[in-house]
Length: 411
Image (cartoon, rainbow, N blue to C red; front, side, top):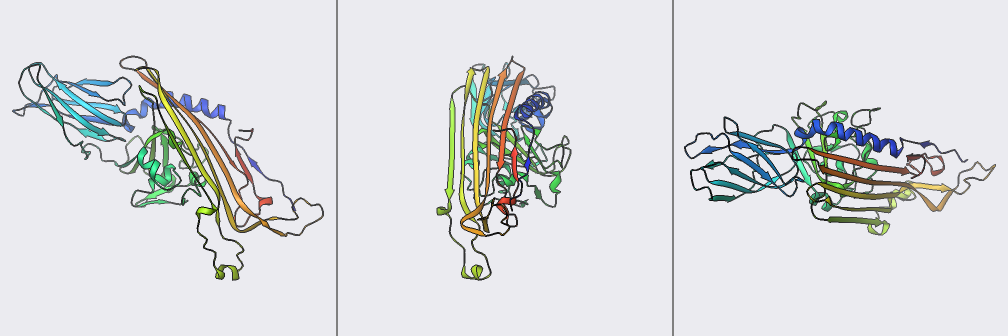
């Protein structure tokens, strides 16, 4: 008997994009300091006395404005916040003292690097350049965080999601595991826990903005990140900051912004049943299993490209991701009599094993505009669509399975 398939629809892409645009313009300012790296320290002279009025400049190709400048206060302290991931050079200048330049400071996630130089009296034209190991210990934040860069995300042999990346952290648990990309789309509905945390307290964010489904628990989002546009993933797993509503695992995806040169990337991977070994034994056959679970076809295609629309003023980065997972369901077959009137008997079509058929696409763009020396605006939009057609399980035949589409009006 042929049963009607259910169709579950979501909000339209236009509605989702407009919501994202408005949310990022409004919320990114509030989360900027909590979710970005910083450089801080105390400047002293050779006698140990603090030096107020020192000009401190942090420069990096990662900054569209090229450099951030602050001045030390009366206690010789300074702090440069809201810095994007990248390699920085910090320069300290004060009339009557040697200029000191500290190079090769690597920042990622919300890491707070401490740089506290000693300046000595000298000629104004003299500059002391210090090249040394980047600070690796954050003595200012109590948050336990691991940062996974784009090199790790591109090389790990799994489904390239925020969850499969976070499970590389010792002690992290995921209730919906992926193996080699065979469960890449279904893992988006999973939840992570660590050290006894609550799975519903988990949050997935993009640049500090939550992707949670407001109609369900905060951990539910069904969001599949476009890894081609992700510069890094920062995972907070202990001692979260006060601006977070819950104390569970937090995954923050930092998008790429582009740069003053045009650059792109291309990632592609795929597999079919020829890449998988067969674990179908005589014992399983005697117990009634006609076929084992196996891969039919999986692929992940993910190009990205970005650069300047106007140098030092307007950058863009765009990326697309197309993912398909098709897996045979062990012991399940299509019905030979499917659709035939007055025939109510199920007869397995051994030439047509049933399989899960899921596809998801993502097309996103990020624009970064340096309006003036002190004001920068970013807009990010990600249009996603999903089809689980059909969602076959070990206990649900293909003709009785549901068809899930987001959105439902064609994509």
